[in-house]
Image (cartoon, rainbow over all chains, first blue to last red):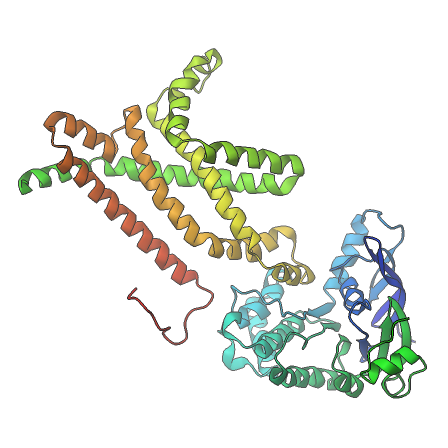
Length: 258
Length: 235
């Protein structure tokens, strides 16, 4: 009926001779929380980074809402409409990095306000009010004037989530958002992500937190060797997968050599 | 030692201070602009990077005094320079010295800038890219503010070093602090007092510059201490 919020078709990506994505399809409907799991090297972070063109896929289709692009010939230069489409896609997604990637010379509030003010050119007073509300939402309004170096990892990641929300995205992309955190700080970040899921936000989540992913997701995908090895409702992927590799992976056994 | 004499010397030498400061500021302004051009050249292409490297190699690798001599005594050898519209400028020792200082400062400043740029975290740029910032905005809002903070301590050293290097201007007849001191010595033959007083003036200028740069560093600090940090030595 409605177009998916995020739709990927036939995504291929090489790094030199390595063929890291071998034709991946993914659909997220509005309100979906899609978890992508798989061992390191399975291509899951690369896939996520291909959506806002932090990596440029070699071929395939990428669309977010009504913005979309088809990448045809590998090595072909991006045309002007392609670049416009990429900008449109980027303006529709909020991206949360594994290493937070806050701007160290800006305060927490400054980080959240930067893109709305200097890229989206929205009125500063309005942005400020909204940014303060975003920091409140992630439980950090009392730290609005702190610089990233003064915040714990968990706090930095929550600021990064507020920053991603501030652009008013249609979807949020999380690239292993808790992997760089000390274990005792993981919970506060997951709590924020869970509350966003409960709000009905469309999200794609690359994660190693199996229990969490199973709990919050509406859909899960297991990647292996650059291919979708298993996809379905979390109960299937985490509980009763068809793939033997997926079964071993979710059981925490690692993946046997092929 | 004769206090009255020293005081009189200091007073005379102060007349050279505006020229010393003027040459320093000109060198830093021209050298800074040229350093930005070199940074752009370095980022533009392999050939551009090679040119920038060659420039830095030559100007950092040879004595500043030789560079001044080559510009002041060397350029007039070329007929086309003597006949160019720039000749009235290029025969002025002030212009030649300032030019040499700028060219020399640019080499050092571009290296300092390069170090600052290299220290900008890749992730900060990636976050700007997904935020849809255009290249110019990324430069202006993210990369340069971070690079400048990183480069500021090293640049402070370059400022004081250039301040002291301007004393070389005296060899091409300019009456900066050192120039005035040399002429005083030839009149009075009291080298210790006169050059000592000149050194004192440079010391004061350098100390003031260092303090100003420190203050700027503190002001731009992205990690202001929330609690006073324990200090091993008084600041």
